[in-house]
Image 1 (cartoon, rainbow, N blue to C red):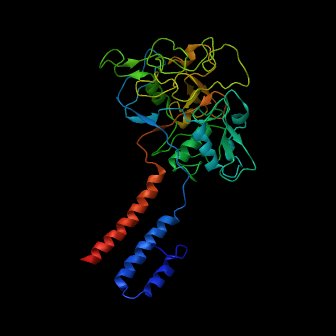
Image 2: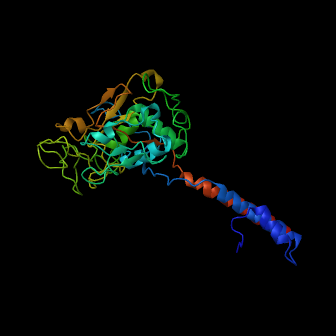
Image 3: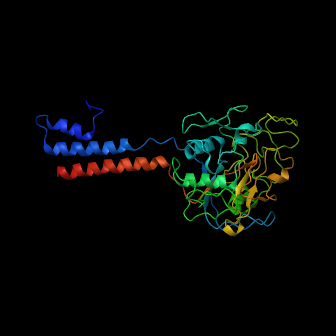
Length: 372
């Protein structure tokens, strides 16, 4: 037990040297052990890292969907977000990337807090650093609803932050080299990015493809990301083939009446019986999601959007046949995103634990060597 908990390691060792029968060998081992402990305690506390649930999209080498928009062929395995990035996750990003509330590069749109159809994040200038953004209770907890009012550039910055380990990770380099750009052409993803915006083919395959579409081993594409070729219903719950859109009534209210102060977003995964073959949710309905088209800088004047939205009155917009593209700087109350990844990515906190393990292992190895 450390009877001097507030003294530095050197002073604790100096005190121990005055204790009778304390051997030099023991003192050296003690000092090394305390130094290792001090190194661990010196690591700054990290905010709880957010977790992006990913699913693996296998079956590489599938053909394009010739019955849709001729998309979907991917010749490698990859991962994609099981859900859209949520309001809660984006709030954590804002508090980390913009702790002082200066809103660098416009990553916060004030409409995130004032448009009650989708609202979820408020900004409080007088709040302490790292806590200026908070989740709004908008007809219920908004944390698990998809983030909206995000441009392609906002999504790319979130991908950079994730790729760089969250926390104080850079938003300007990593997956994409942005260097302060908020308008103009989108850039291509950098090699080795741990998280990135999926290409249109990656997004499309995860949404509509099944290797067993026509029976076991007979591949093909569904019209909707609910594993169905018929238009979905819109009742929240576990029933099959449901999605958040307006098929005469809004999904959230089950009424055809529109109200400007009504939330119309559903929690990600709320239609629990309506996932894609690979286990993604809400790739039909809720909000449109950015995709990187072919991923090349040469196509950077626009970036893709797919999936439909809470206010879509025609199921066509939720289907594989609908593909839109916009200027990458555009932000609307039905633009969101999900991330993709080439590999399983360890939690940032894992690296801190690994560093501690190495320090302890090194001290243990020294003790064993001295004991021989």
